[in-house]
Length: 279
Image 1 (cartoon, one colour):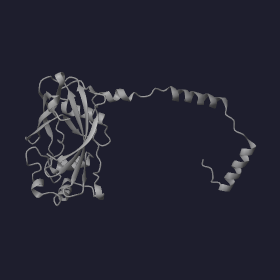
Image 2 (tube, rainbow, N blue to C red):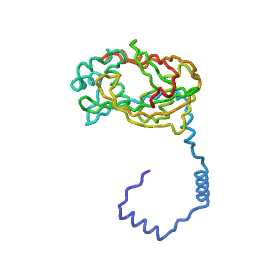
Image 3 (cartoon, rainbow, N blue to C red):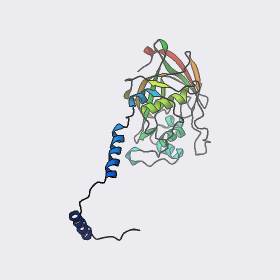
Image 4 (tube, rainbow, N blue to C red):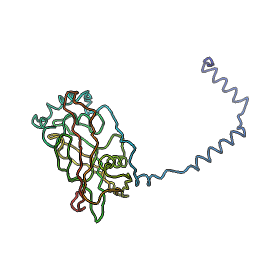
């Protein structure tokens, strides 16, 4: 049962009276419990962060973070891909926007809308807008000073685009580089390897920005924040090989006003000299 409220004066008066009448003393059980708590507090082992950063097993399931797209200059979030398309039209050359999803190797407006919705991409309101993406790049090391590169990709629409770069993947919101590395290896190489052990080379992490025109979205300049590491991955073939990736957008039927988003269906990999790969 709740007690009736007391006035501030009554509370202060009672507190003052109790202070002078009694002096609180700690009982023996209280002292014993306090001692036990302090013992467990200082005796508990500390986590080994170095070990966790070097050995990365596959995550059980890739995490997908859905969030409302955030825009600079207090832009209104895009409710649909069509709303994004309408926003882009006055800000991009018409021939550039018309080539999205049509020119071989490009993606469409639906892809960009999904990137914004999942927090993988942000846009600056300018003409043209600037797309910013955090990307993890994994330089997988092989025998005889070789590096694994993705030579080309086959997209879900049947087109092929050249790559010749180490394994790369857009990072999810709040994802650490180590978590992104494990997820990227599982998604792009998981169809050919059984074990999921990834060992990151200590001290290999580097971060640098890079600005260039987007291949996926012609006419839309991009700023990539690259998080790169060197790593060993167990179970990879020593010869060139191909991996398949599960259909990422199979549940989209194109009923949201625009065509179905494009995804990567196959990755083609080659072992090349480390000297031929840009760091």
